[in-house]
Structure formats: structure tokens, C-alpha cells
Image 1 (tube, rainbow, N blue to C red):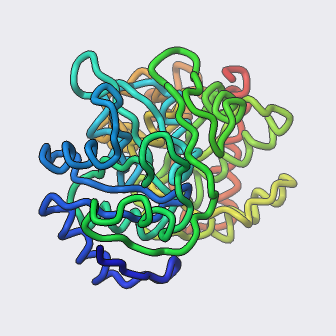
Image 2 (image 1 turned 180 degrees about the horizontal axis):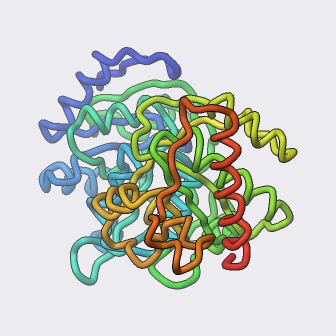
Length: 352
């Protein structure tokens, strides 16, 4: 068996691509994750999956968990619209949590995980697929936390092994069933059921603007300040036009500071479907933002509101509900924007 040694922090991408090519051709690869070492095979190659089951001595009725390269990849394999599911993966992925969810195949479930390991993630990406990836041990034996222990169990049975040093957690991932109303722990691991339940049960409020540097930041930090004693609510913000992480504008930080609120640690976040699907309430700054949200995730339409709906009278609706973008304008215009948002946020407090 060929063994390739890689730096766990700065791995040679060409060597990972070489291993990924073996996966694409139906081979089996031992590789590190953040929890234990695994054996990877192309999920869609039946010959490879049959071989993996044979070398693992895995019963036919016990499915393999699947490793994906991103949070968004879950959308390709699960038909679940549960906000709890998306809360959990946004909090714990990448990381040591496998979620069992409803599959795209009617009546079936699938176990999915995004590992927090650069070698594993790059191997999945370069394989141009997702990996069926059980732990690299014979069924019933201890899961290995280093390459040597994995190789000793599978000499001559797999094609190649990647030695990326000892794993981070040295313990198997937690496996939680999220197909029912309440999370059910199927295997205790790094993450406890209490941690999962806490995240799954929290209400999520999301504010959306364009750059996530002015309006949505004001709204997020104002509501956080109002509800600072509430541990059952997550308040966040994102932008429809964010491509790079930037801090809030100086004027945003300044007008919030005048309210006794520190937003100097804020960095912009791009809006994505995971954020939208986890949110219980979504507040946008303009009608255009609403259109962008619904284009991205039409299934959240019943949870999207224009923020200014909560601070204007019916007779003022004819003047429009958009909150103008203050970026590049004067300090006074930032203060006017904050005043509008503050009035709306005070009303939002009553909803949550």
C-alpha cells in the first residue's frame, strides 16, 4: 500500500489530487479527518462501495455516512426544510457532527458530515463527488486516530493512505437524527445532545442589506443590545452583495457607539441559502433585497419582511418602505438611517 505523508496545515494539493484520482477510478483511500481516520470511496461507484463494505466487514443493512465539502452541499442530498437542521449545520459545520436527515430519495435517510480538516475537504473537492467514508477500522474495532493504526488494519485491502498526523479530536463524531421534531443522539461523540438541542431550539433573526456594513449591522447590533439577556435567540446579519469580508463602515461604528453599542468587531457576511433556511424571521431593507432573497430561497417567503413595515403608518406606505443606503454619505444621514432602524427594531422586539 502506498502511503503519502502530508503537512496537516499546508498539504501538497498535487498529492491530494493524485489520491482523488484514485477515488474517481473506484479506489479506496485512507485519510485523516478532524475526528478519526476514515476510508473514502466514491458514493456513486457501486463497485467501490461494495468493495468498501467488504473490507470493512460492514453488514448490508448498515449504511455509510457521507462526507460533503460544504454546508450548501447538504441541499443536494436532503429534502428537509426544517429550520432546526440548518441552525445545527450552520453552528457545527465544519466539525465533528454527523446529521441524519431525510434523503432526496423518498422514504430514505442519509447521514452527512462536513469535516473540519483541510486534507479531507480538499480530497472530497478534488474527487468531484462526495465520499462514503466510514472510520478506518474493521467493524467492531477501535477507530484509529493516526495513519499507522489505520494502515495496520487494512494492509493490502486499500489502494493508498494519506498520513496527515494525529487527528484533532481523537474521538468519533457525534451522530444526531434530525428527521423528527426533537434531535435524537444516535452516537455520543465530541458534541453533546445538550449542545445540539440548544442550537436547534433557538429562534434566529436575520437582517439583510447589500454590503452588510451599514443598515443590517445597525439593526443586528441594536436588537442584540435590546435582547442581550436572551440566550434563546440568535441575531445575525448578511449582505446580498458581499464577496470579501470587510468591517462595518466607520460611520456605522460611530453612530452605534453614540448609542453605547460596540460594533467594531463586525465583519461582513455573504448571504446564502443556509442562512435563509435557518432563519425564523428575515428582515430586509428594500424591496430589491426581498426579491434577491426569494430568488435565492423562494421557500422562505412567509418569513421575509421589509424592516420598515414596522415603523410607518398606513398612510405613509405610499412613500415607500425602503430604507435608503447611507454609505458614502454624511454622519447626519447615518444618524437618520439609524433612527429609522431603531424605531423598527423596537417593534421587532415585541415579535421575538
